[in-house]
Every structure is written in C-alpha cells, then in structure tokens.
Image 1: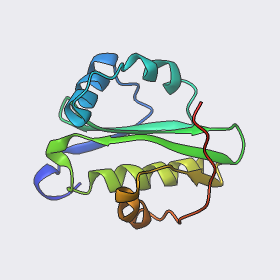
Image 2: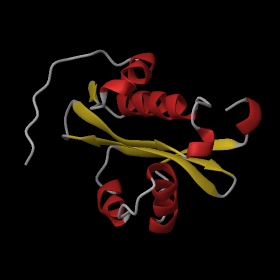
Image 3: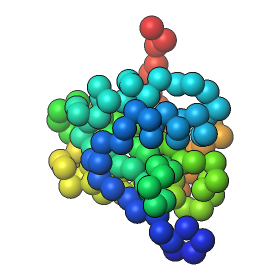
Length: 134
C-alpha cells in the first residue's frame, strides 16, 4: 500500500484469531456476527488473505473451492477507517492472482448491485446465475 496507510501488510493463510475476526466484523458490519464460523472454514479454503496495520487486522477475504477449477470469493471486508483507500481492491486482486496460482480457472463472486462498479474494477464480468434460498 502507498500513501497514508503504507504500513499495511497483506498476509496469505495467516489464520487470524476469533478475537481479531470478531473485532473486524463488529467494526465493519456493526453486528455481533459469530467469527467462530471462520475458524472451521479457513482450513478448507483454497486461500484466505488478511491485511494488517501493525498488529491490527484491518482487512480479510477468503476463497473457497469445489476442489477443481471453480473457486468462490467470499467475505471481503475492510475496516471502515480504510475504505476507499484501495485496500479492498488490493485484497481482491491478490486473491484472484493467488487463486489462479493455486489452480483455479474460474472465480465466482456474488454481490449486491451497488457493489457492481467495485467488482468490475477488479476484473469481474457480469454473468447470469441461479439462486435458491434454503
């Protein structure tokens, strides 16, 4: 990263603690999401990335896989103090490159319409998909 937050370090597969993930989620989403669900899934993901400003976790994204060519970008989050700094774009583009290096050939992402410009900037193309709520 450059500029104001040049001291941000992106780490691959660093396994943040429940406490770190919980603090980031509460700051970003203003809720009490249970970070324990991440500990179960981090071990089975194709990869996950964390962003650290000194000792503080300020960004996160994970990529799940079907075990073959398809991978899925999940849970990208940036601390509110660092939004619009380029950190989210950096995390997603690093996830794309790392997923490619690890054998994925397609990377899927679901997003709300307001986030379309962000994901297009990261290189994602609009596709049709199906969804059923279970």
